Image 1 (spheres, rainbow, N blue to C red):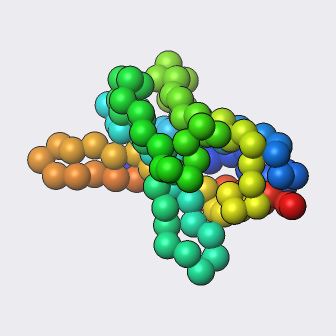
Image 2 (spheres, one colour):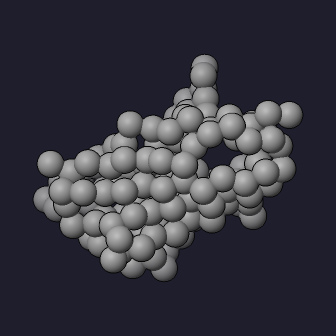
Image 3 (cartoon, rainbow, N blue to C red):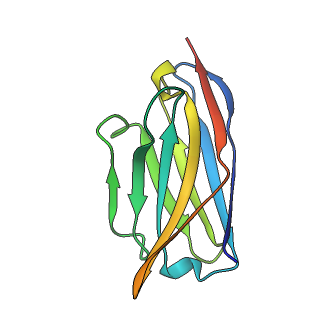
Length: 119
């Protein structure tokens, strides 16, 4: 059973920083593509950033490019999202996802962590 646990959310003022972590257990972390998503009330879930299994393939949504940094530590089975220059529009529940294709797509989700950015 693959489990993902996010942590690091909280309340921060605009312009501030937060670092989210996603700890993965029960699976082969180093083989998963990992991603961060977010969802604000009344909005669709949005992919924020993706990092491939090697850590070399990284992509960001246009809304966070230049402000957020995704990374992973395969030795610790953990993925991170460093969020700088936060804006009120970044307020959302942030979710981590692990995915892998073996015969079919397998994906797993964490329970989410809330990030609130005050003006």
